[in-house]
Length: 131
Figure: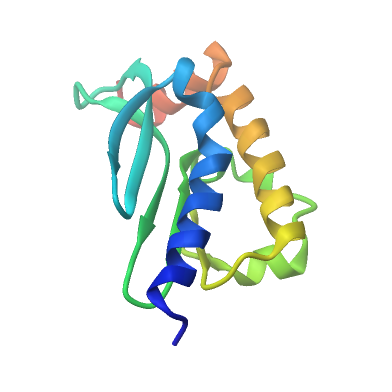
């Protein structure tokens, strides 16, 4: 099992992918091992639409990216290496820093941010919620 300080480095690198979006999103959490952002779009449940987050667990560091759940077409063309890191529909797990995969995840995050700023996409998500 990797040392805790290895996870700290992984967490910091994944958090750095999300940090530039703080200006246009809301910070939900920013503490050791937990960083997350939401949009300013209020959904049917009267909660903001979650965008992404990073959380350190016991076995790995998870990067959650909701746009890939809401817009699965974002995953088209994803490398098999990054695909292997997926758990569920919007979570990527890392035990170490792999530069090319972080670069790809950064591009995926940028594309997801663009989708979550498209009013047509947000309306479709609301409609899918029944709202």
